[in-house]
Amino acid sequence: MKKLSAMSKVYLLFVFAILYAPIFYLIFYSFNSGGNMNNFESFTLEHYAAVFEDSRLIIILLNTVLVALLSGLIATIIGTLGAIGIVSLKDKKMRNTLLSLNNVLIVSPDVVIGASFLILFTMIGVKLGFASVLVSHVAFSVPIVVLMVLPKLFEMNTSLIDAARDLGATKRDVLTRVILPYISPGIFAGFFMALTYSLDDFAVTFFVTGNGFSTLSVEIYSMARAGISLTINAISGLVFAVTVLIVIGYYFINKRSKSVATGGQR
Amino acid sequence: MRELVQATAAIVIVCALLFFTVDRMQSAGSAGSKDTLTVYNWGEYIDPELIDKFEDETGIKVTYETFDSNEAMLTKVQQGGSAYDIAVPSEYTIESMKEDDLLIPIDHGLVPNLKNINADFMDLPFDPGNEYSIPYFWGTVGVVYNPNLIEDHLTFETWEDLWDPSLKRKVFLVDGSREVVGMGLNSIGESLNVKDEDLLREATDHLIELSPNIKAIIGDEITPLMINNEASVALTFSGQAADMMWENEELEFAVPQEGSNLWFDNMVIPKTSQNIEGAHKFINFMLDPENAAQNADYVGYSTPNEAAWELMDEEVINDERFYPSHDQRETLEVYENLGLEWLGKYNEYFLEFKMSLR
Image (cartoon, rainbow over all chains, first blue to last red; front, side, top):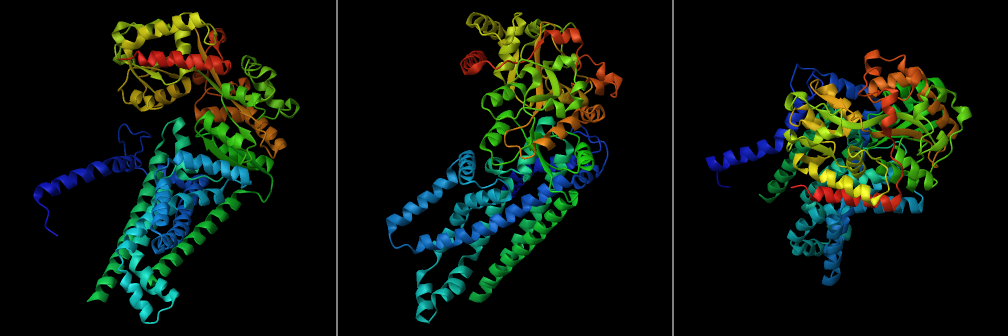
């Protein structure tokens, strides 16, 4: 890749500064002893202490992460298999129909999805709570995973599969030793997309929470009526830290699988 | 493939750990009793210590959930997927919940602390005889202003001050048709519950004369703007005003004398309740003078609990901006349920006023 010119570097820096400024501003004030975001008085950790003292908030935070990880995992499995299924369809018309249906789910408004889930769960008598939130998060994540995995599948040369078959690989071998390793970057990307979607979803989650189960986005939204307190800043800071850790983890996994892949070619 | 398997295993292990931790934390809170109570309230609308105290006193485990608007709460209660034992809607929502048969009548015999509520806040038009609802917090609609940013003679004792030419492009209004059209009606000396086209027309025309002074019609965003001295005058709820004044001591709040709105958030027992007896216990607990005082102290809104007033800071109770005198309360009106047809008309006039803004 060509080296960036000085101008482009300045521009890039500028863009990132704008993107990150609000988050850092928020986190900066989470250490403010003044109790508001007007002026910084002195450094304190009391808002973080308040988060950890409030066991309800901690449970909600853990629940949020739990739902995100679990729904991401399930959606990734379903989505990957779905993508493989779509690609292996011989009938072109059928394949395009399925792809369009997948895209419709991505663009349909969250409020509609949330409301329809609420109606569905009420109709079939599912109690609102952990299960209903998990199911709906899986549902809106699957199409995203499919979309992330598909390009990798299209990119894959079909003669790879033919070659494997000629060499005596069973169907299972082809899947686990040829297809899955090849598309694994897409799978990881899909998983992390699903994770972020689940973490920041408010609209769908709002409708399907109940019986004491809640996630952070819903909780923060209802806290805002009595004015934003710095406790919210502190939680946001924590969530940001967790997200950064996840991204770093993703980076290392990605780097390792890349070096394995290129190492294999050489 | 190995990476995929490893990653999956790692996620599953982390999930199991999280699940275990949450489970432990949840059971640590309960006293081993299966008796639970689900409370559905506005965010930041209760002192969390009171929930602990209630759990200790009664052995009932409280599941506490929050909502951010009456409409959101109503949707969840109507769908019935969750067993709410207590909800805290505002007066007009109570009226429509009553009509839709979503509430369970309250047995006054189980709520002896009801005697602590000031008589002015009982037996109001939205729930005669308090058959279905018990007052939780109340407040008014008024004008919050920053005396340093406007001319001295404006104190908003009268609504007419909002029309003062010196306030050009300085006034913020809360985005609600009942609040704004009601303010228009109050400013021409009428009730904010009128069902009369001519009076509504007159009020709207008067409001349109206000449009040069309007800077914006917005919601909760007013709070930070007022706190940071970026806005000088706003029509808003007393509770929101109290928040602003807590952060910015320059601000003042006034309820004009011609009259204004008196609003209520009341405790009700929705039809979804699985623990009606516990719900009564909770209501009675919240009406205890000591608990009500502690809660009002924490939340900052005005409590209707007369016995609690004696336990609270005198400065707060004697602050007529938030605890108006009996005489002034006489001028305040509670919103009546106008019915769909008239509510639609209020919305139309409000829209007409909004479109007149340039």
